[in-house]
Length: 124
Image 1 (cartoon, rainbow, N blue to C red):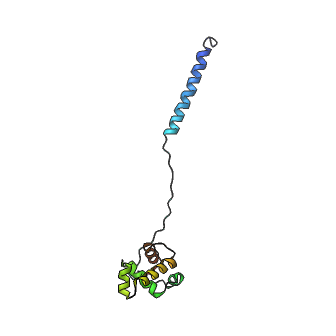
Image 2: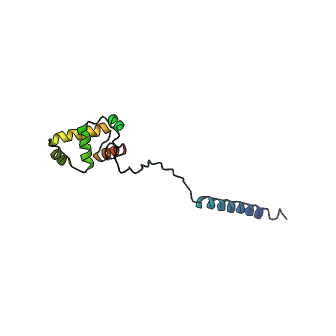
């Protein structure tokens, strides 16, 4: 009897194998892929109300007292023209001080310099 239905038996067996393979593949492809992403960020604690100048970091940066003063006025939101008027110096002098501050703090923008100075406790 097996010989009589040999062709149907083999076709049925192949159909069962392909059905099982199709179910396994569908389950494998429809399963959501979970990727774990680890993000490392620096978290800065809020500063205490009383500000203490970090002399060690100030010496590391090599900022002069005038450059520190210009940096503080930058942090207060003053433009170069306003800083020049407040310190009674020319605009080109302030531009020179600003470029020296950026160079010594190893940053490209004023906002980066202010942020770095606050993190180092150079300015309040």
